[in-house]
Length: 116
DNA sequence: AAATTGACCTGTC
DNA sequence: AGACAGGCCAATT
Image (cartoon, rainbow, N blue to C red):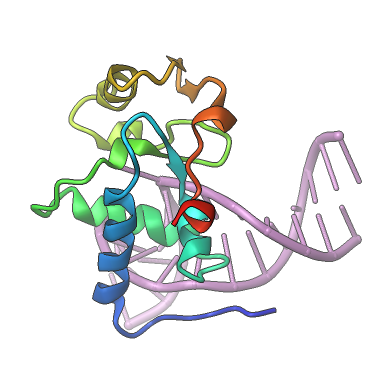
């Protein structure tokens, strides 16, 4: 079981995360797990959340609203300026959101592993 | 300073 | 097929 740890150069890892997030095309979404896999962190999905959480207090302007969990739920909505911000942004890009969930998630899913 | 929490996911039972 | 356990690790308490 290749369990890879990247305890050193964490900042660099964050940068790589941000780089991926920045490349998510408008109108598409991806997941924490997909990003983690793409970076070789098989069980590191949580770390992505940590990185994004950090990013919001930095100057990084990231389309963080395009990152949802693997079921298409907007689990991060509470960390935005307002609880509706995330859903609003997505709708603005043409992604249907009902409640806390992206409809037809598989249709909008953008997987960095395949697409990058 | 130790323990808990959390923007999560994938095995295994 | 549904529940559980284990892994990741920074931030917060």
